[in-house]
Image 1 (cartoon, rainbow, N blue to C red):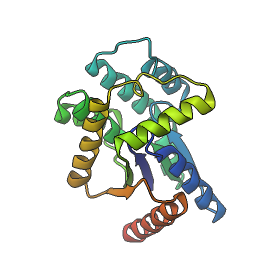
Image 2 (cartoon, rainbow, N blue to C red):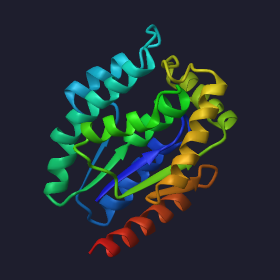
Image 3 (cartoon, rainbow, N blue to C red):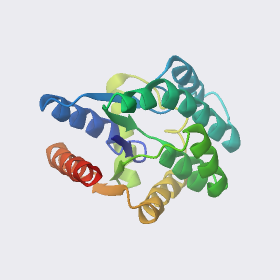
Image 4 (cartoon, one colour):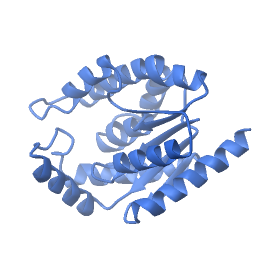
Length: 209
């Protein structure tokens, strides 16, 4: 199974993925965790460019960058893991392209979807967990993390509130469009969210068997 985690910056998706991974490994699951953009040497090089706050990147160029990383990730990591029968957990996939470059930046969403499908060899997630979080709470989390780690805000984290509101609305629209997307309330405890995620994964797996 291929499971993805989505949400705006500061929604908690990366923390939820890590917690789900730990819970799945504890019960003996064979799995691979990865992220976008990144997950491979090529992807990590793209990521460093993509989040660089000193750069101004055209929205279409953004889409090509993340899809270059995606193509490499699918072929080098995701597809081989699925072929081995492993569970793959990925922090973001093409829903992020639709939400950020489509709804957020205003690029043509149908074009972005076709580009993403070409890059992913038409691989789509079996289940996508969308952490829905209000932008003010998300901003507070991002600022707190930045102060705690001493790292500055990256290029996307520095985008204005209106951009992140459009991205959040975009994710909600995608959840209405794709039945594989399960929307979760990001204000709930991690333990409760993990319980729901594992139950959904088990139910989906039973349906695929």
